[in-house]
Amino acid sequence: MLLLCATPIGNLGDLTPRVREALTNCDAVYCEDTRRTLTLLNHIGIKKPLISCYRENERQRAQEVVARLKAGETVVYVSDAGMPGVSDPGEALISACIAHNLPYSVLPGASSVLMAAVMSGLPAMPFTFFGFFPREKKAQKPMIEQLKRLDHTVIFYESPNRVHATLTVLLEGLGDLDAAVLRELTKMHEETVRGTLSELAARYEETAPRGECVLCVRCRAMVNAADTPDLETLLKNLLSSGLSVRDAAAEAASACGVPKKEAYAKALEIQSSLS
Image 1 (cartoon, rainbow, N blue to C red):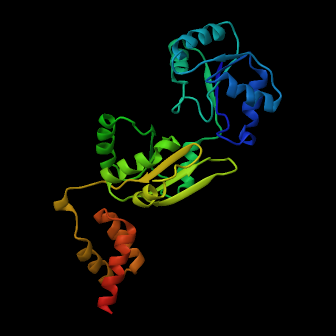
Image 2: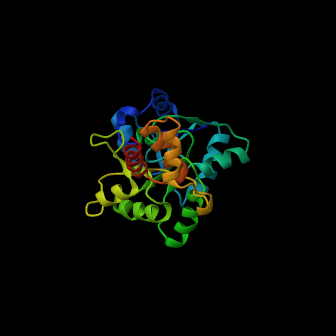
Image 3: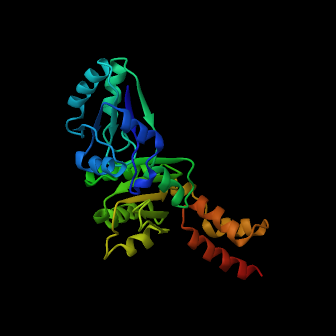
């Protein structure tokens, strides 16, 4: 059968025993980059035939894999890091197996998407993963319009050199939402930087972060201005009902689509005037 195996996203110690066993016992390893996979196999002391299978030749390689499976071989596929098929090749291999009624399985492991969802400190359920943020402006506009309708955490991959530009586009399109930039996950210099989009954009304006990055943003569904409650009025009603400043600010920020810091400052001002 075909085994699609998750590989470490940085720390080689995250390779699972099941994936190690699959790499040991398979007949061949198809991989996104033979150099990256050779480093992994050398680390665990395994020698196997390596065949490149990347985005541009995946459909051609899929036919080779089908022939191997029909001949009774076991084939492993690994992308450079993480789970094949998630912003990496792998989908065409699965489609070929389904089309030919051939068995395949997935061996789980490290995932930068799931790790970022939890590490960000933003609500992790539900979340939407969009892969890499669009680079072209004509593709960014429909993406922003889609994000405006969401009311949960969204996750993007991004190259370090584009982090500031992407944060700026998100800020201009969505407002000053809570967000996090995560880099070098599972590696020695792993870092999670939390803040609003404006704070993060300012942080990376002059100096780009180092290493592979993941962006998490807590989207707030945008409604018509006529339907948006007035922040001050809502805070007065919430504080009068007995809510604490912190709880009232959190609820008002969500309802009015404003940053928590802004709502909290306004709530303190109103509380002072009431006391």
